[in-house]
Image (cartoon, rainbow over all chains, first blue to last red; front, side, top):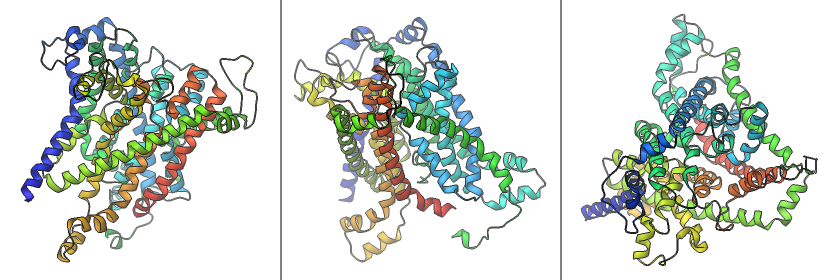
Length: 272
Length: 308
């Protein structure tokens, strides 16, 4: 009886898995298909694979710089968010001062802010600074929302380090900064790494800020893909090739941080 | 439990007030400049007639006129508003029921969960732009793989395409959102289920309570904070939905799938009507802010208090 329920459950989950993965698999297959296989009205599951879509879009259409931009933006905003956010998170975890929880909530509202509301003033602001169409504008925009993720996530990780360790480090005669960097940071390293990876993913996947702030030179991959879609004769093989390059690294990263994903996605509210 | 045995000690502590300030200040200042600044700028712009499309409208202060127009005589805004609400309610409800069910199945029947949950996560970790593209490809009229199978089972007529059939557009967008975000619900509910204490269930079994009674009387009440958390986080995110729909339909055909953020985008960046656009953006922000406060009050204050 129990056993047959179990088989039923596994059957349902297997179906769900197929539904969850097939669309992505199709995109992956499409990126290795020639034009005729893509346009065939009967779906082609088996075909002669070709690698030509990748060089066609990344080299002939010059999409390689977009990959570089994506990397630079995500790395830049991750490093900035961690450098600025982690110390603040430590303060939230350890110190107490009036209005602390209000300030903490204030950081959350910035994470939740709809990009479409923030984008227009930010666009005008960066235009004044002459920073539109550079990756710096996007790095800063992404840092603003990643920063609050760092503060919210790292507070929990720091809070898990016993306060006695702080004291022991201080008794060793280290300076405050020395104790923080040499003792606390290494202890929080797994959490720090998970947070950094999540920041990287969020920035890499982000579309709207980048779409509004950069038109050409500083475009990351997410902004570049829609440009390949034309009303007539979209080259789907090339679109798929870019989409695969834009998503595969993220899937690898997801695998790495899966343990801390729940915490990151719930702003530390669920430990996972 | 630990807190009762370990007394908080004073004095030899890494942070005194003097050390806290320089650590917390940069983050606060950055957020102030790049998020709160734009917010106030938006609120101000919403009270002007600024437009890049019409040289006569150079940003004169007009008080609350934009909001008056928006609330009283903009049927497109209201259409878009209710469309967004219907989208959020339908998508989040389906994701919740489905996601909860899957989490429960995994929790109850599967011992080695790691690989399964990792694979389930794929849809939600893809860039939303990529999700939009994937489904646009799958639902292409002439050669889309899903279109083909939909036709074979008779759900789609021979010559039509999903995104050019107005009655199919929103249900499809909701289905795609469910495809993408159900794993999110599953993941978090599963984490909640895994952390449930065993003893209430054992006691109930001894009292002879069946599985359904246990589910309703013990599991659901224990899971309430996590359920609230999931619903709010998904609700806030769904309300902000832009990327996928923008890529798949651009809000069309006509305004059939023009969610609020897409309407805001159109007013701001297609019509360049920035004053009025700011008023629209402000309304979007307002709704998100309200949901966010509920999130904080309902879910977070408890765990924050535990940590403090």
